[in-house]
Image 1: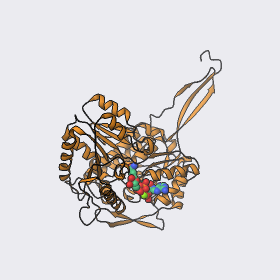
Image 2: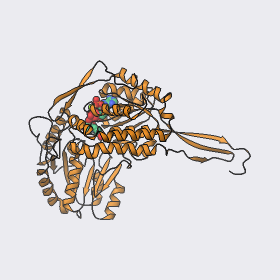
Image 3: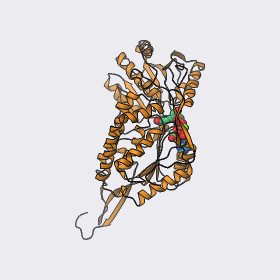
Image 4: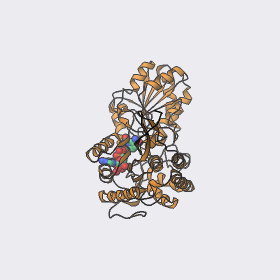
Length: 475
Ligand code: NAP
Ligand code: MG
């Protein structure tokens, strides 16, 4: 079974969110298919070359895979556009080159994995080994099918793990292409096993599997909870969870308003609001509030929603009908709760899952639209008076993934960044990220860090080795 595509009996539809039409049908993996994939990964880990290669050799194969990804930028970007509604132009300059960069970053780290020397009590010496954790299950969502695939897979490969990857049901296509490219790059059979399928079946089988040593998950808090419960009820495998957010962006009176409007727009409407760090709660200080609100509404008028292949377009369709309907129902909630709809609020066109960039004002902190993750282009705008008030309200959430501050005052920037409980704070920018930046949540946004050298820790076990030193005058 290892090293080739197999066709289980069942299939499911891959849909184009631009039209709602079916692109193709994809093999649907179920519990038995996960089992086969785990067997392949287990065998590759216990007996295969991958964990036994030098870090340098692993890095070489990963570099080759990065090259192949770059050689196929257009095809890959097109797959995520057709299947996920993502901007083709972004795929070409952000997602796909970002995936290659992620592979290269961790490829470069693969031969720099060291333990430490321990100074134990007199007559003993010791050291630590960093060993690969084993077979990893990666469960990924649909909003960044390419970047998140490699954010999970690359550090696990560098660490020497083998793995089973379940992409989201909405975006099954590009991951299959990566399995193909991995083989071309010379990745040994059984190291990366991609199984498409549904969360309740294939995903649940991964989290409950007795032969998977670790699960790394990105997605909703609700599913993260289920994964942790399944891990606890099976073999107590460690999990890392990168979950949702309801991230605050605080704009102070001294901000350059035009610059702030651009940052806020990008922070909220980038990737059609389908981004876990979306700046969905925008707090503006009262001195500039009115001017800011007017400029924001003006900016919305120039924001083009449409076919994601069109280079003039800023925002494509939401990923599927379910998300589309969920977002529209949140908009209705907002209106019913008494928030003021400043702009947007409606679908665009009659076909596909397009929604206008939507901004609510007069939002109260306890309204549903201010509390729950909408995962679509819907922003809540709020006013504040003092820094202390802004900090308090920013922290008034069960989430803690990201936050932003726009100010020229260094003291304000420093105080706020230390006072907000979130995994990443952006000062005078938003969604600015690179692969060397550890990424993950506080509170119910999860735990564990993807990206940066921190990510390698998730895929290692630390083993201590202790031995006596006889007749040594030193201690
Ligand atoms: P989700 O259900 O959490 O999906 C993420 C991944 O988990 C998918 O591969 C999914 O498979 C799988 N999954 C679902 N149920 C599972 C289970 N019981 N056991 C194991 N795996 C399971 O997210 P969604 O339904 O696609 O989106 C719902 C909400 O999640 C969004 O509105 C948003 O709030 C949040 N979300 C957050 C992120 C993020 O980056 N933090 C990303 C995506 C979504 P299926 O594809 O079959 O469901
Ligand atoms: Mg789901």
